Length: 272
Image (cartoon, rainbow, N blue to C red; front, side):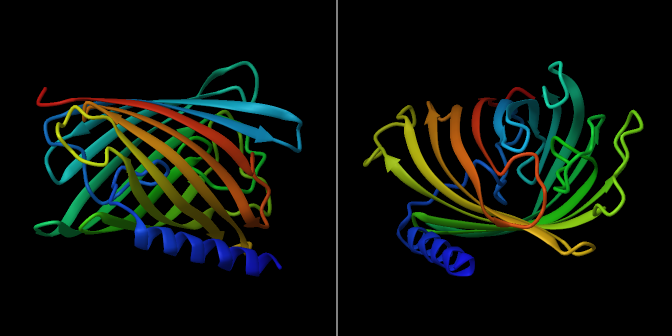
């Protein structure tokens, strides 16, 4: 029954993708496109996670600064604050780089590919089998992204390899836990409003649907999540994301199998 449920959700996702309007600013996964060159972005991501096995809610705050170095290169620096081990405190930081190496652009369509890398450091306790260098583990991630735009439809695929080490403050990886993982995400979006463009100052409302998964080959554990979300873009400069991520299948122990995400982002154009 579980496999039938997964297949049904994937078929629904494909159907929505075929009918969707193109949006490339996905909420849980990065597209192959970059932010504008010579711009600076400020981002605050709030994660509200339901730790059911401990009967509590965990809150994560990830402040982030983004730099559009050129039309091909983008750099991020972020911090991680959490109350996973009270009190609420700084538990980590990281850097992220994305380089777009392929652009096949014509009118109303393009295909783009990018490579990305992330380095993260964390001093939190390691209680869970899930691997995540953006907020929970010390380590590195390398990956590729491909994004296809066809008129008003966009679909994006990312694949990555993640390798972790012990966290700081003598927080070691438990015996029997994986040290590496393979990650995959599929994303699509749909423009809901406006129905007709008259000005770049119009507010956009976008509906997103993403599938996110991880497989740990050493221990043969996995999870698969579905993440619907809503996005508003105001004055082509300020972005507000609201999403809900829920596990639909999995065998590993995680901090949370469902949670809310609320993000605010603002871009400053041509400041460098």
